[in-house]
Length: 355
Image 1: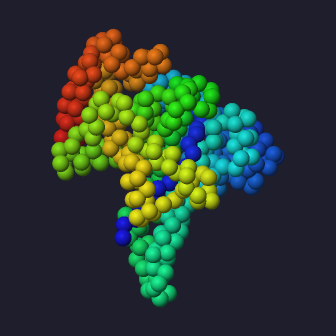
Image 2: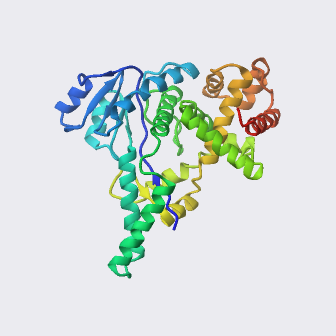
Image 3: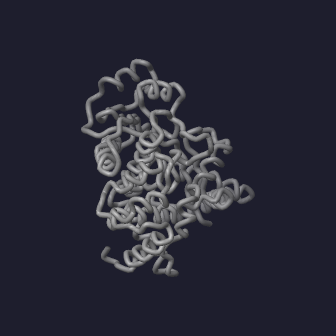
């Protein structure tokens, strides 16, 4: 029996700087009764709310994420509250929004492990209801042991920090691309901003830390070594496709699980859900990491994504930008040539174990 966890939490972000003692916003929220006795600290425009063991360490992610976004795009005025709970109450959400924050519910590793254990136990007990109690208990313990082997209860904190930075990237890019409004500028269903999903995802992946980047390259090299796969998607498909998790995010809204902020699925239930929703994003993330690095390395410009994003904001697209500005940035001038050069670059990168 295989076990796979799916977590879905609403995502929203903060601003850089050093952690501060409770005052200002934290005091106001406590006096208003919307954070109860939860720990709260502010970080130069951002806040971390909750009692997780790594709360102070999460606060340290903000400065790096905001600094990188400024280096690659523009300074951001967006404020964010990282709320260390599976869901955020309507009252707290309203208070955060009123103060200019976007709430980012976050499930820390310990809570995530507990949710996974509870989900596995519930699933196995349902599947073994006809067995004697002793046998059911043995099957549960076996299932938990297998799950621990494949997904340790205490995941790498560096990977977790990189994931938080990733979500911050989505929120900062959304604010930059679509403005102050919380919704997308277009009314169609979107995974993030109204920018193409590849560009929205690039802004998030660009903010990931070294641990996440090493993981992306390791997975890409594993696929390359296994069957020669360099790019999972042809460039024209990649540039126009929806985020692979868009259908999953929409499908999760239909699940009745008691918590509006997070859903936990495991085992066959998770596999069936992912297959039905088409949500297999790993290849999309890997290709995005490679695309970012290709653009920055080839152009020599760390803000190349910003210039491309500006073209999209002005109503253009990547093909038009290449025709006008590709050559002066050391890049091809057509999408066809870009696809050929990008694949060759990626192949050389994956073949080089030291890169």
